[in-house]
Length: 423
Image (cartoon, rainbow, N blue to C red; front, top):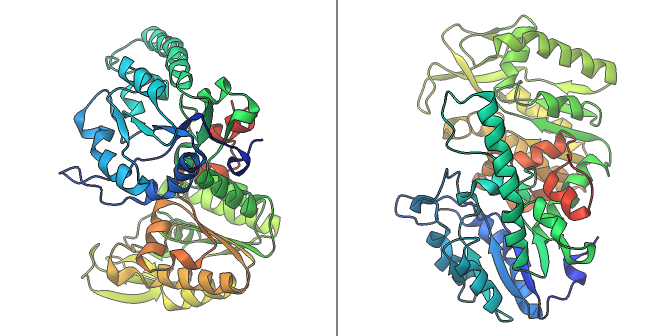
């Protein structure tokens, strides 16, 4: 497939799908521009070659046109970071967008309005009555799919080549992340630099494994991670299950967990996963102690307890010192590491020690030659909070996309550019 490094954009118009879904405050000020900065190398390469940019993105989850989710709010900041005055089209497929795209000169850039203002971007009908019949739903879906073809064709008509640099939406078969790729030949569609790095990082931990391979899976619910855990059991040497999931596994084995978070309907599933790990020879690592609190708040009274002996009115909000040592030893002896999910309620400063210990162990292993991938919103927030982001091998920008890749699923946004099937 085509590589952005080998492609000369001189005199060409490039439609670049980015992920500029950045958080805004009540005054529409950007509170975190990480996603915009992440796309800059790709955008600047195209301009430096003498190409012109047509930038497409979504913002939020609008159900139609609304000022709240207009990309005009980020226009000035994008211009400032890119170093050129970016033009704006107030409709992604309207007449103005077509005229401005056609008039673009080498070195110029155009930002289209929010792609998700149109139902065709996601391919899902909107405005259906709650009591709509199955037949009405089916008809509405068919209508959107039909109009989606014209929507994609219109977007593709603006450009000579297509660049997907939006890994965060790569797991969605949306118009601008997957379907549009069909309108460009193999030599005219490619990943941007960010997407390239994300794909290589995922391939490194899932396909090019140096052992021992350790995955650290946090999160509150076993049910939300079941497919990931089952896929990892076929790949890892060590699987650390932590966070809120700890207490479901503990209770399943007869432990007393007080009022800790627990999925009572997943106790059998937890036991099944423990058995699967044994059958596959995977070292399943669970917490042995916890930092407990008498209330779910930062300034609650705290103590330490064995994870299976938590008093009735107390709950586990982080791992304890014995568990930190166990986790750290496993991580430090690993050569491939995947971290998704904190060990506790790291948002509360009094319950950050476990996640920090995991992060620092990953950093030490990385210094000693391990490849470490950190992904998922909370894990990324952890390494940023602790100042460790630049000390691990790679921090993924993709939440849902990364998780689906770990599950072993084909990501439409990646497959489409490669010319591979994804449905």
